[in-house]
Length: 529
Image (tube, rainbow, N blue to C red; front, side, top):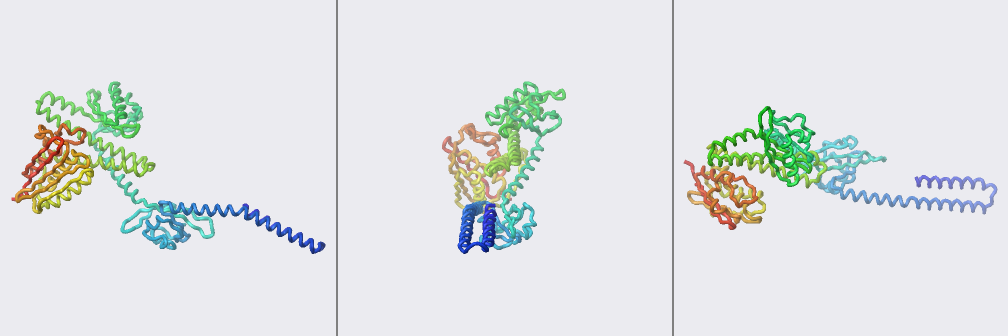
């Protein structure tokens, strides 16, 4: 606007000067004409000065804006391209060289269609946003391509932004698969699952069965649904769960269809102001417990204790599934707001829970098969040295805070054993040695082969096993009294013993409190024939 005004002033001054000069040429002397010329020159210099005064700041501002745009282009993490109306690359920032695996100087002047053939040659024909696939260094990458409107000039330019979303797409696909699997597993569980907020109001539920009244309970406080005494205990457990962040368990009774039903509720905090309650009808179990207490002797009571431990393990399974579903739901609902670190934290929690469930399920199934005599035993030829080295590589990943020191005196190439059961034997012994050893400790793993047998020795420097408890180590669900808070199911060594028995082998244990434990397993090399 200022420039236009200045141009008008200069033109006006010139026009007026010529007009006055024409009128004065007839009657003024040469002296007057000279004064007029001086006046016109003076006005021209004034106009030029005003023009310089008004345009120089604009030139500086344009230069500063250009520098800022260049810095922004360089600092951006995404690839930014400036394209001609024919799709030719005119400018590109450093990330472009990485995403196309081509130096910047070689990109300038090239058509973007050459690298992304699914795009039209003219940017005017592109969608505002699209996803394109490109192969870089023999790897397929997924790009999110966004295009600006053309610049308002004689030769229009377009700004294209390319973002590598390969990892995000893979994570989304994995999350969808995991979420679908978890929902299927959750729907297969025979329990009623409720979400309850801090005020005791039920926000959602997954109903199960037709014996529990679930109609019209969403949005209502539990005081309106449960008997007063049960509601009071439930609220106490709910507040206890929030304060301790631990799973709360309580049992209660309700009269349904003129029958007394027993229920067990497990309450676990899922988010800051919400818990998940898993309710199971344990009427039959309670009746079985009562009958067992009346009819069975002490030995039967001990077997019932083991059954209760299995029941507890199954509930642990459900708690892990609930944790997985909760994390998956949170990522689905709030993942777009979270940082990548927080998303990864929840994904790692899901992976950890899945691995825990898989191991627990495998142990229970294997033990159950052995109890009924259906544990498969398939001999095959194994290179024991290579087998042990591969197993150590796998185990070292799961126990990064311990070092497994391997030693073999000679090669065992022609051993005939069940590979699956051998893996159970050695992985359980190595896992226990790491679990009960101090952080950073060394677990010694040794293989000795004779003409008739293979001897595996696993030695740790952990907490040790009390002498009076060593005779019970291989009983199902048995755990030594000094394990403290170290997690475990008491199934591992029972599985080890049954696997060794199928091989007609032997196991020996030597342990001292505070010094460590050594397990020695002896298996015949060749049982063919």
